[in-house]
Image (cartoon, rainbow, N blue to C red; front, side):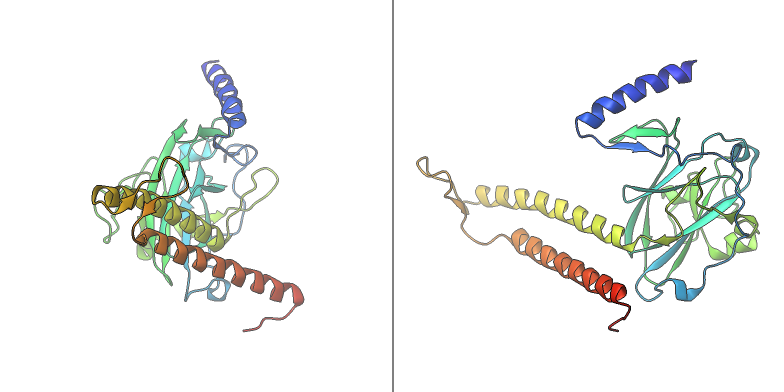
Length: 285
């Protein structure tokens, strides 16, 4: 009864915030737990090397070891990368994602009837960490809310969230040698629990990197202008012409923003060329 009342209140708030343009985190229709829908995919196997770009990208495996807690779940936790929801991980399962090198922000949320949070307010955030990814590398992320891995990852500081929480980075030797990931089954996408994993999310990562970097540069631009004003390098607009005034010399942040925008435009053009080549049935390279 208490959960029902809490859910009704949260749903009402979600509706209000949705109408006001706020971001709602939800996995409605995707959060079915193992108690209602046990995983039934094939036993673990690494994907073939020719199925991902080893030279330019990285591969991340997510797996969840078996526990009675996980097996009895009505709803399973959601996994987000760079703000995008990709899958809900059930008991004794694994999946993978091909990602862009760089800092990948991973968040896990526990849903209540599919609803999880509004903006930065979550019903239950169970993991929040940044995985620093390098091209050509394979990473193993282990989730278990009851028992941590027996060995910490040697490359992580003890304070790193991926070395101390329920979601931890483990080595290939640990994942394979302990017999953990090899006993899991593939997290299929089906009508009872659809997901968007086992694919490349490189383009989404690149878009997120661009948006994040541009926001950083916009903030840095404001700071640069304030510093120029303090140093007498900024002319205020006259009262009779509000469109005048400005810095007395070019802004370094403007140069960086222009370079970033041009690089992203080039990236989008390359995507369009690749898509056109794929649609036409030939590949120029």
